[in-house]
Image 1 (cartoon, rainbow, N blue to C red):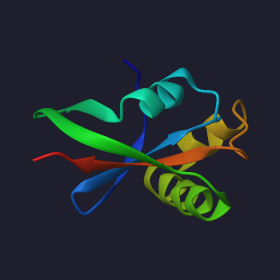
Image 2: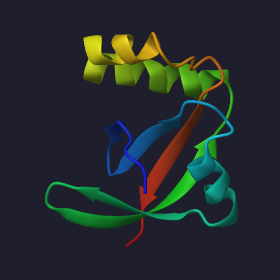
Image 3: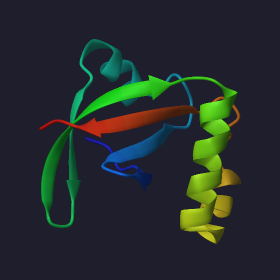
Image 4: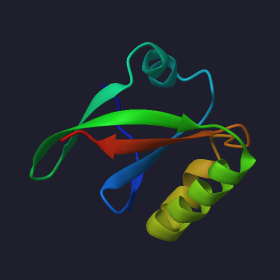
Length: 92
């Protein structure tokens, strides 16, 4: 279980692994099925990492837009230059 910030894109969610070594990201390689708990309930998703600078930069911009100064503050403590964007698609 981990706490993450996310952005929505249609029915999908995007989350960020600040580094490729994050334990939960490594766990996804073995099992891409995840449950996300949000206000209103729990939903099941299939995770798909989207490595590379284009996906990372797009997600970083979306997180900055959503979380504003809080995202900038966290950036002072965590280098996200090698972050991995992860798309979560709902499982029906």
